[in-house]
Image (cartoon, rainbow, N blue to C red; front, side, top):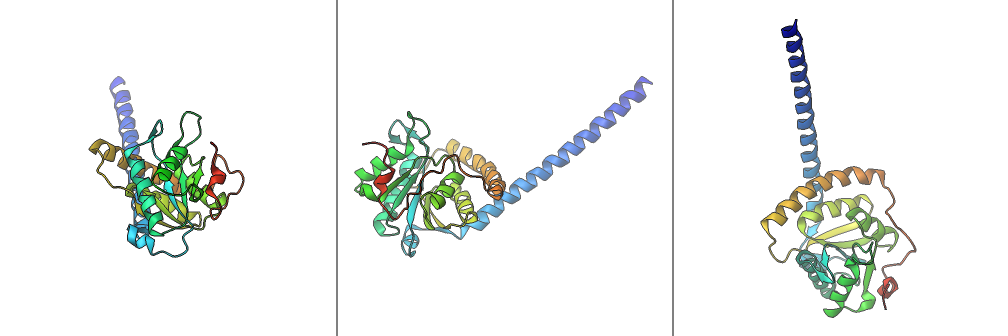
Length: 234
């Protein structure tokens, strides 16, 4: 009796393992398919600096935030900002929209970015700050609804542009992207970003279909106005 009972338990365990394995395989195939779809969809909207400079009627260059150390930009963020400034100087768009995390008093991406761009010669009035760009989705949503942008040029590293462009276009923005990578990053950083971004593409692929409001909206600040309206420091 004990042998037969153990045999039944063993068979049940085998069945459960097979079902779980099949489910994992299906989830993996789905995740890889979504990842491939988002990349394929967005690839045609990624331009060089010179190609982006030939676009007509772009409202702004949207630079997506990344890490800062105090007020010092991380290498990835510095590359993005320098690329955004290059696009601005080339006449690709008349305004820069710096979107990032300023959710705490002791952590401020956007003022650090604006200070850097001003030191590079960009007029303060042409630099808008989105203090509540807590995620890629929220940055795109707020660019559309708070800053009333319609046609934008997004600057980030290419691995991130695929998702940013997909979200922006799903939200109705006429969006194009420029790869902001200027220097080489460490192997560990690239691997981490690749894996993280694969998961994030799947998340936002579903997220945009529910279209939730961002953490904050607030008053409308048209991107064709004065960027100093977004200043929160004297």
